[in-house]
Length: 211
Picture 1 (tube, rainbow, N blue to C red):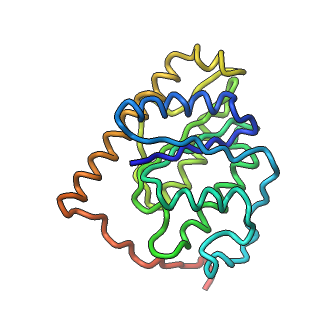
Picture 2: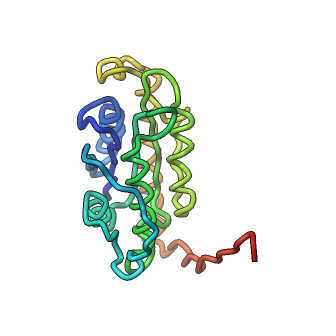
């Protein structure tokens, strides 16, 4: 089993990475393979609603989003992390999530995300973490992904990695998150071995407010 942890920070080894690394360590301790995937710091364009992914089964823009989509095919769980920029996820992370989830839901066969456990984490110097946490969780709920929780909202505080490591409660939340995710992954694997698979999702129904 493998969990893909997505670093949505422009800094490869900054505060968000430090939090994700703590989650990864807890997962590894429970025998789960991990990979921290950095979205890098080149500008990521947003979704243009061209719907080419319906035919391509990936995004029409061949960049880091498609690299992630390929890795997501083999992942069993996900953790999405972002720093707080103006009380929201980073601009690059928002564009990344928009495109990855839209194109990923149009992959060949079932969605790349359907019923795979997932969690969000946010990192800030001071404030905006809960708004960012809420924003990221919305992607997972629309994709029918079981949300993995910790003992508090998944957030860390600090202006640099050393300060984040001093956030004892925040780092504890990261460890508990990893432990809880490992348990859920193992429980789902056991269920599949017993023949219990997730239901085939219904075809989406779209209802406009103006008819």
